[in-house]
Length: 481
Image (cartoon, rainbow, N blue to C red; front, side, top):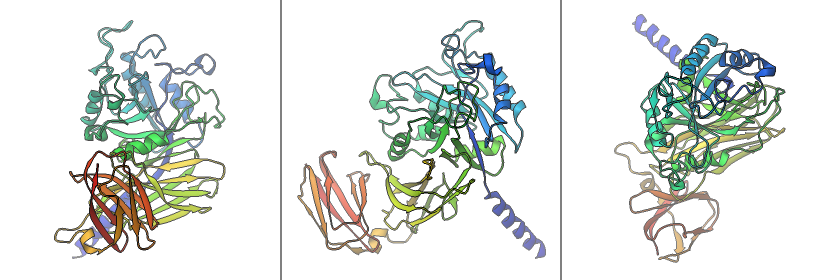
């Protein structure tokens, strides 16, 4: 009996210990003279990954560096990568690694950046993927694994089928990553959800660059961002996180600005790091020492969950310099085909914490939530999401069946352009439209007695119109002509 008790205690202790994560700050997008980086090597004396890792180890608040050389040659230094250098880079990465002190990684930036193409940051392959049949001074093809330059379907499938690999979108544009070259409707952000691609992609950047910065004073920030792209892919249905890129082409590794990809992992080694990236346990931060905790019932960002109750989310902002958050927000969204992007459902100002419980859920719908924080100096921090699907247990009645009925008026029906809805009282409502297949094509939260919905974007047909509040629900038929 005593033995069993000791075993139980050890199990509890080990499980508790496994849940402790540390924060690691760094960058996975950088280049050296192996391709089109190290453009200042004549001054810096650094031209290869080994030198880059040595430089990065002395950068402030910088725990890891990934060198992602371009996967092809094209022409000298544009980008100029040759197959034999891939194994050299992997060896340099292994030699530079210092477990729990500094993590050095080597991978590839696959693809080209012209219209309808796009770059992917890929880690986890011990062989080079490419398409060039010959380049100067290389015997045979300039790749180990062939994948056509325009074949993004093929590259996503190769990544998905390699259990050790992941890819991260690099400075993405709306028309990037097409499966049929030249057709923007087949681009990742314009085409329907694809589960294979979802399995390959772990994230996209909040910011990228400045790629050709020569500053090493941590203050040269990019002006733009990819926040809208992130929200769009989430709304299509992709499960991906958000990070931060430097895309260094000069000797600035970790120093051109203080922005960081922040990864939550038990310790700093390659196994834990890859697991954290694949599980989306990371976030983007303009600030190099801000620790952001975004959890749902103890589950950290990147978690994909389901349950029968209302989820409660907690945000804790902890800045290393004691800076208090000026604004904290939680966004909520869901997968849809109508172009509906996530919206803000909770906000707190001049505080380092925020707690939010969501009582407006449709049973069976997977929602995603993510945190956004602004600091007084303008620094921006965005978390990867938590996904949650409200489900009922076997034998239970549905959420709608448990609720009382809401009485509401809606007109006209049939409708063409706009639908007016009137309710008897103010409350927190959630409205949704389902097509005949049962797919939710529209959802919106509101706190009003009267609302007008634009129906012009929906095809003609029969729909199910539902409204729920914390206390009641109702469903009606709607015809769109």
